[in-house]
Amino acid sequence: MTEEIGTGMNYWWVNQNKTFKIALNGGYLWSPKERKDGVRSEFYDNMTKVQPGDIVFSFVDTYIQALAVVLEPHKSRNKPAEFKTADPNWTEKGWYVKVDYTLLEAKLRPRDHMDTLAPLLPDKYSPLQSNGDANQVYLAHIPLPLAKALLSLIGEQGEDGIADAATNAIRQDKSLTATEKEQLIKARRGQGMFRQRVGATEVRCRVTGLDDQRFLTASHIRPWSKSDNTARLDGNNGLLLSPHVDRLFDKGFISFDDAGELIVSKRLPAEVQKRWGLGQPAVIKPLSAEQRVYMEYHRTEILQK
Image (tube, rainbow, N blue to C red; front, top):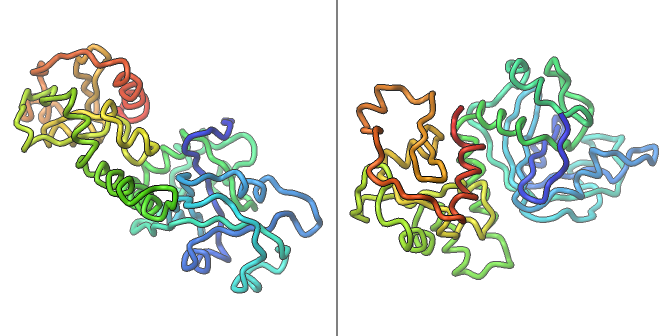
């Protein structure tokens, strides 16, 4: 599997056996600019390709032990003093990338899941071998299907960790005003400007028909953690949903087609459908052209098949 590095959020894999604790404490990634023999390496050049908001899987001693969100573009910086004994083969001049790490409570051992992961490995520049052993590389770009599979195996902590780190990135973004930061962070919780904008077009839950605003949640169609700052505040990227419906929508158990018809995942137990009244939706309202773009992402990337 091959995949070009895109202009949106990208996913990376870093092998950090000798440097993990140092890099974790310092909040950064560092690599040489070239190998000791003077030859450039794809896995060092990748340090110049990461962008703020990208996600990095940190692989240490056969486990993914942390997730990191890139906070700033790369900088040219000499080897950190604390790295002097980490790898004597590393040259002095290097690349530095500031990141925000989130340690995983339940570490993931990819080797235990290679039936799922092996078919998703990139054909070239892969960080892993098909048997689960790590290749001798530093920073590797990984395709979206592989990243999604890893996040699914990690579970909710992975999604929460990405969102938490993205929130920290917003707080540290010097290009944003204090008001902009406040609104973006509130939008994660379905509050503030985002909720007001959603409420301008969505006045009731599309499933239950409830229109009492006190009991409705402003839910992002394309998840907050997967959106850029514009989409995070875009009212077209939201629905007002009853809390239990919001939970199902957020986890990909339901979605909507462009006509506003409810789509129920085959993975949702029939008992839940019955108890929570997921029969004919109370409101069938076609999506706007702007909403359709976001809902297409939800059906493709979030809805459980």
